[in-house]
Amino acid sequence: MLKPDFLPIQGERVRLRLLQARDAQMFAEGTVDPNVQRYGHLPESEYTPESVRTMIERDVVPGLERGDLAVLAIADSATDAFAGSLVIFDVSDESAEVGFWVHPHYRGAGIASAALALSARFAWGSGLRELAARTLPENSASRRTLTAAGFAFKYQTVDTAPSGERVELLHYLRRCQEGDEQPTPDSLVDRE
Image 1 (tube, rainbow, N blue to C red):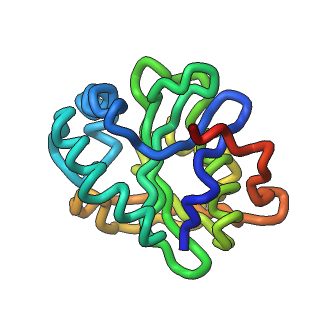
Image 2 (cartoon, rainbow, N blue to C red):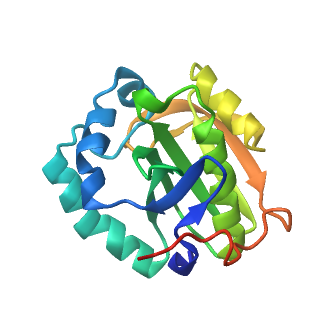
C-alpha cells in the first residue's frame, strides 16, 4: 500500500508531488506531444485541462487515499513547475508498476531518471520491494532512462498497455532496497 504521508519527496533537481489542478494546462499540453501519444499509452485518448481536473478529483485523490494508485507530478525542484507525470499503479503488498512521461519543454535534462529514483524511495518507504516498468522496444529514450534509474531488462512479451492496446513490450524490474532509504524529514518538502 502506498503511503501518501511521504509526499511530496524531493531530490536535487526533481520533486514528486501530488498532481494538482494548477498542473492541468501543462498536463493536457504535454499529452498532445507526438512522443507522449506514441509511447505513453495513456488511459484516455485526449486530455483537456478540464478533463485533467476531473481525473484528479475522480481518480488521483481517491487512488492515493486507498494506497493503490499514485498519479504524481514530476516538478522542477527549484520552481515547482509541472515537468511531467509519474504513475505508480497495480500496487500489491510488495510491488507496483511505474510509468512516466516528460513534457517536451523538460526533456533531455535527466529529470525522468531522477523522478524514477525518487519513486523507488517512495516505494521503499511504502513497504514495497520492487518496481516494474514496461516500454516499447522502439522507445530508446525510455529504455536508457530506465537503465539509468537502476531498472534491469527482464523479458519481452506481447501485453496490454495502460491504454488497453495490445503491444510488444519490454519488461524491466528494479528492486527497492535499503539504499532507497525511507524518506526522512529532510527529504520532505514543506507541505504548506
